[in-house]
Image (cartoon, rainbow, N blue to C red; front, top):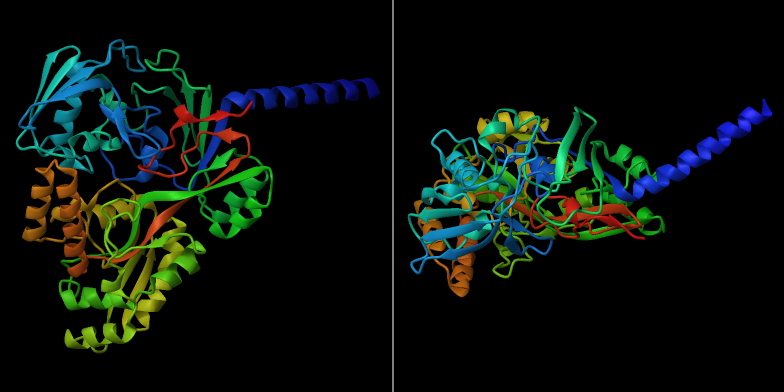
Length: 492
């Protein structure tokens, strides 16, 4: 009996040692949000790109961790003198995960699908300037624009612009087939998604043989899982109050960076009484940004006064336009005929910044007479009710898409801001290629939406990551929603 116990114990020790060795070429990364599906070209959910961007799917260009745009499936390109024709030269030997070749016809299919009349692409406006896409030969694509667009290569780096194949499009939401360094293996709904290294990848083979994305929505459970080392990293850790404990523990590293996430109190501009500028202005002056940052994010976050990232060189600080001034807010409501205040709804999706921040925002609004009924919703409900249905008064969400101020030029976008002047300004920006002139136009755009009090601008979301001490290559900042597995490895 004693011998058997010894054999079992020795076997267990060997298994643990082997498991430790295996862990050096695999990783388990936790996310708070589970994707609604895995097609980045047909939904606005950040969680989709967190899993698939650069891992499963790739575009003609791509973002790097420092925010730069570099060649992707297009190894080079030429731009015509008038700035309207882009000729892309595709990499040779690229195959999809099903073994089929990726060629110019797939690029044409992807771009035409994204800009089609019946397109469900959440960022369809990125492709509206395309007048034609021509497959010149298997490795050459000519894209003609109806006007110069200084941000076109930037737009093609979005997750919404990845290249997909018509043969696999039917099952893309549940069994995605791309060209990336990792292949889709399994999705256990409510628990995890597993990926494996693609041995036929066109580029350099990544260090990790496999990766698992684990979904942990509850902040308390997130803390427990990380402390127990059940997971190797947690991207956008949802409990900032626990960061000091991780900083003091040599088993872990804390990565604090910035994101493209403008966290805003979105306002339904067409729903009365929010169709009155004075009411939207009152909402803005009722909000104490720093109290929200301190209370919901434990001090992590940068106040913003418009829909623009503070780390961008074209940023201008407009927080003074909507300084916390509750008496001013009350006076504006009275001027708008709402001296007794009014009732509305405040839809809150699952992230901590929304749920925790929403409680504080509701109390601040109540102090000036705006009684906001909190409606907690899951992401699928938020997408259906708020984003697509526009059936809301207020909501809190972080817009994590890069350089996305152009959404304010879309009258049918969920907050329904319709300004011809702003639309003309964005058209001018798109036709401008000079960097200094673009920066000036971007500053003008920030000032315009700030002055129109389109939304309540709260703070730029910080990127708070926790990882085991030996894990390297994680993005500190988030120029787009992505966890780039190709850059990750374990220290020797």
